[in-house]
Length: 533
Image 1: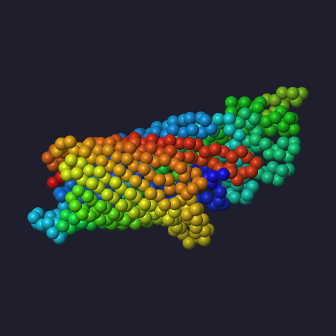
Image 2: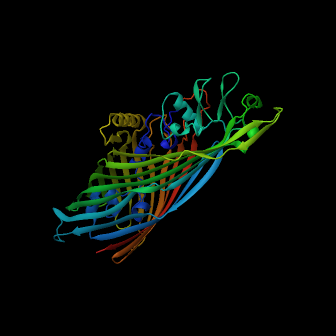
Image 3: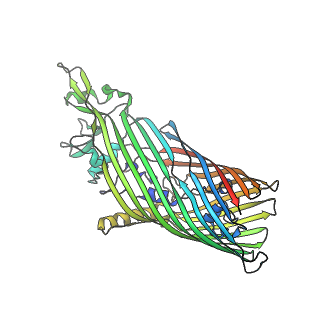
């Protein structure tokens, strides 16, 4: 059985639940390159090219390639389409956004234009690049299932692992999603019962239907201050100080109902005969929200070397981003029950709904520190005079080196962080990513572009999503007129992964639940306007 890396959205397996976990670590460490339209059209393969504001974020030495000063900004239109398949039920969800991907200024100083040896020019840059977009929606639906999120809550309760955000909400004497069965000596949930043989049974004979809706929005970005020098038109050296930001919000709704709302089929009739006044669960909704804001700093250094005019070799090192993060977290439950009453002769049963019950929201606030992994980038570009170029970027990231740390002196917080960090090391590995870009210039003022990116899964072997696919396909063009230029690009970001709503692998008396297969296609159109002076 494969080990499952789960969504922390609807699963609690520790006594004190924190919002931060390995899923959050990966989210805040992965870059999804956007930026200028030229960079988008080349799928981010700009590490050895320079002369583009977004290239500075890949290799800071790119600032020293500029021959003049420049100002650019890039708005975009993004459509995210998510398709899910859960127990054979296919669903789709779309979400549009209008992000501002980049704004930047590069200043160039040439002390003497005729100089060709030593320091030919010096440069500085300041601006913003968006490094990731979290805006998307997922809708997951499954029918006729014989397991429930409540099974996870029940199992944790019987292991004495309680959380005020999850099973603690469900086990409320005025709510009833979880209850203690005195005769059986265990906690049961409202979809379960103990039959006459003393065995736990799942109540709804025709199963339950599940609906899960996840709405995410936000972005990660970097404000950077950089500088670089051009030495003899052979070696370009640069560095940046980055101020990184994270703004993320997720809302989740998980709904379960008796399939067909067929109460006659809820329990075997003989069970009703021994439980007059029995109350059954018709449906319930679990809701969760997470709001995250983080600020961090990092350093980048890079070099570009031109052994001959036709070849450029680049290398860059990105330090970890050292984040300080604040989370606001809440969960709630609401449910609808029905009462069962027998007729006087005991041959018929009447079902009547009871008023909806609501737990209210359970709130939590968490502050912590987080370090992303370091990153190494190697680049190679072949420039064919003024006719075009081919560019390749290789990127190395060790996701197993991601680390959380507590901002408090509480020993339990520190122990929890240590456990999460151990899970990260066991779950994630090094990732090797490749990006390819091509430019062709049929005329002096017009350029055609294309690109492709291939990103390796960060998960170790035998973990969920170890075989996930992440690719980018892009095209675009550029138009130059005097000191002004405009670039247009389209990128398709294709990702295929598995999402587990909850895990029942360790619940030996339950059928193991399947995860949902999700294909996410992100369509992006970016336009860059720029002026050189």
